[in-house]
Length: 286
Ligand SMILES: C[S@@+](CC[C@H](N)C(=O)[O-])C[C@H]1O[C@@H](n2cnc3c(N)ncnc32)[C@H](O)[C@@H]1O
Figure 1 (cartoon, helix red, strand yellow):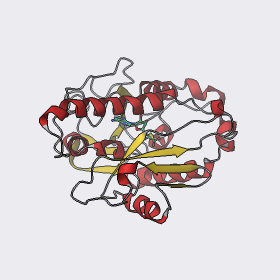
Figure 2 (cartoon, rainbow, N blue to C red):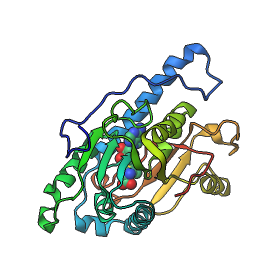
Figure 3 (cartoon, rainbow, N blue to C red):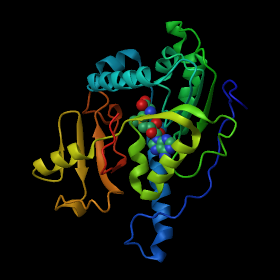
């Protein structure tokens, strides 16, 4: 369907991932196990995000990270307003629950494709796009046509799945590009997808954690963990020396936890956002 309205059935299954070219320390017998670990990790990330419930406006305002959320949204709004032109065809990699749909609407995009690995998030995005979640606020429908897919944006080429939609004027990947840095192969696939689907001269915008800041904080900490009342980051013992070779910047795991709800003492109210993030060596700022 070329630039049509919301395709309810939109989904694709990618080809098997290419063999990883990072991690030279693996012998051939370890490759299979490594690929399995990779797909288990991607599945864990998908399940984690799918299981996240939507917050009401009141819950959101009471959240201990409301200011962080507002800052993140401000960063995305500025990026979108700066780099999007009226009528642009936009590809949103790792689109999440569609929290940015209003921002794209305000930028007057002409067409939108959103892809995310978490099925639950894609469903929420679809609901939001169709207007159901916003009925109380009597928000008018989005003016741009959209397609929403569930899939891994970093595992395989997306050009087949999106051949009717490409090329795009702008590709965006907000607060998610780091998920591709688990291996060099995935990072390369992520960037290959961006360049294959953008028109010549098209624009890519993205945000991801700054590895330099994380390493600095790790080295300042006494142990292998640091944080404050709303977040912590913890590295495994294998990084006890706090040294990272610039020759192998991929697949450096750490655990990240964010306190999303108040009443942190009650397990049911606490959302443990602790997927094993992978860290990049090259900070890619917005
Ligand atoms: C922090 S959220 C950001 C969501 C959205 N971009 C935003 O800014 O609101 C990270 C998102 O990345 C998605 N994600 C992680 N790995 C992915 C992958 N391999 N392919 C597609 N989406 C992925 C998660 O499901 C989640 O929705």
